[in-house]
Length: 267
Length: 369
Ligand SMILES: Nc1ncnc2c1ncn2[C@@H]1O[C@H](COP(=O)(O)OP(=O)(O)O)[C@@H](O)[C@H]1O
Ligand SMILES: [Mg+2]
Image 1: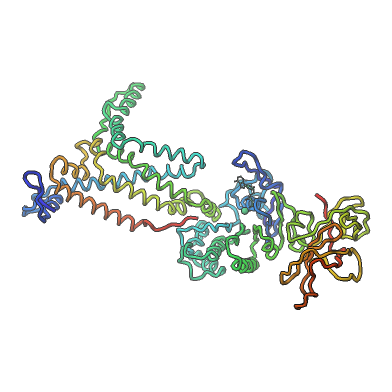
Image 2 (image 1 turned 45 degrees about the vertical axis):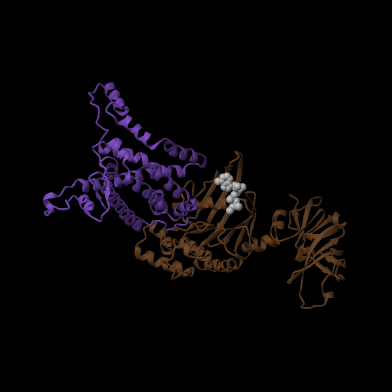
């Protein structure tokens, strides 16, 4: 709520100009169709779809892993959980840099592919992987996978094994037991993980900055730039508020649908 | 229909313990359970009851031997292909499903049409007196009600055999007694074979048609409650079921129905029941239940009667429980309080002299292991 002063300071006055700009309109433009600029709306939309896709992929990858760990012998479980957590010991930014090394045109992945192609005598042009939406997605999935594995593992591990036996006893094979018993009882873990992943992905800017470059600008990057580069904190604040409200709406809608804190006592 | 609902033939189950040694949780067990029978496995904790039950259900496979259900060998058949259902000790209800959904689950797995599911679930819930609670979740029910849901969930599938692993173990005493009666009535009504696991001998005696007494993975005796109590076949069963006095001795003579046994602790020869297994010269243990010894001031007829001194007296209402020194042995004697009186002379007092009568027909000769 305020306006940017010519010197970069803030004039404190009530105005909705910044929100109008975010919607892609000019405050003093009389014909909305003529001066509509989809830039910010598309950034918001991109952030939303990326967060959605990341969360979905993370769930699909984390669930089998968590299931595997929860079903492993007690002694092995700790080792597996340790392996899940190890990457978190290094700095977030360093891990993203590692992906840059892997995805670069002269990076490790292209190196291996080139070598393989050479082995079979095939022509090879290095793939352009870095600075693409795909790279950002890969980075996001990688960064946030542990935050999904842990809550799902916890909820799976809490399920009383006699429930599996009861299901089998009543005529359910392994697949039916999974759909009717295991999955519903582990939903609290999936919901918690979704919240732990979706919200930070919506707001992050490091991954998209480093792996997406100028190609993938998210609302996080937009906000960061308003504060640090463009020196327009009022517009940045407006964008933050929109991000918050958007995240809140999605989260509330989601938890209404799948339940959160709906206590499931197992056993 | 085969002769037996369930049969265990020479079944062994060996586990490797976490310490690395092996243990025969079930050790060469033979059991034949008849159709429509209320059959109990009774034994103290760790004797292999649960493991036996789990092998019938299909959660474990025998290391050796074979389990038959309705005459068919089960081999490595998984639980969902067996015609038995289990009531778990922890109930194992699905917490994310309502009572209706819990009970309907097994029928849905069998692809029973929705209309029929509705009808049968209704019937099953009526049977266990839970009508009206269909929409509740298990956590909104009391322990006793949860127990009934577990029962309805298993019964609704109309299994050949219902397996129950200490189903009443988690209930308080009063509810437990009520459920014992209800279970027994229910079993008669539905006519399904019940295999019931318990460590509570009163429960087993009062509910069962037949009982298998187990110890360390072995079956010690199978019989009706009366047989198990009145004619135990070994010292373990005699001692485990109820209470008993054991006297060691040597068979001196066999006189058709009777054995003459010299008992050093009584410094005398006593007359005991001959079950046909013993010969002169053999060592035996004589077992006599505390309530089957008579303590009198003056014996009228005198077979097996010995002077006794009252050492301890405990009045417990229905009986007066006496510990008596009889020659060199100490015997527990329970005298029923037949007459209602406050007169102290009607009851035995400490250090009182009396006669202990051990009626020969109550003295059972058992092998000395
Ligand atoms: N999965 C297992 N692994 C190792 N030992 C077991 C296992 N299950 C049972 N046992 C052992 O087998 C014996 C019998 O157990 P169980 O059948 O549960 O007895 P009960 O039900 O009569 O108390 C016990 O000594 C127990 O420790
Ligand atoms: Mg047990």
